[in-house]
Length: 125
Image 1 (cartoon, rainbow, N blue to C red):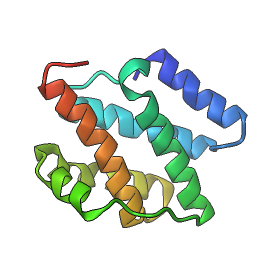
Image 2 (tube, helix red, strand yellow; image 1 turned 90 degrees about the vertical axis):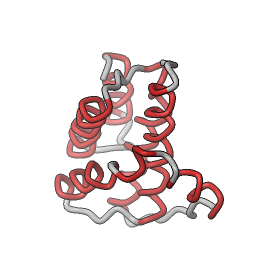
Image 3 (cartoon, helix red, strand yellow; image 1 turned 120 degrees about the vertical axis):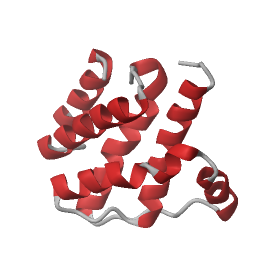
């Protein structure tokens, strides 16, 4: 996870959008994702993902819900090999923060992560 992404999290923390446990959980998740899939998360390829993840965790901690993905998107996601490996990683988020990530948020996290992995497999940054 590059310095700009870390600064992005620091800005969210300073603005009161996230707290330190969420910041640490996002950094740990990013590191696990990088190690598992050989990714290099940087501002240019993961800014949206890191921001979404941090804000999603903050929403969950506040008890807020989001609408889920449509069935067609879920079916397409299920065809990506990384899809089946990601639940193990977000279980780590749940343990670290003492929360249960709702299925709708799991699907959005998975969507963003699968896009990153698919781009890597296609040879794009």
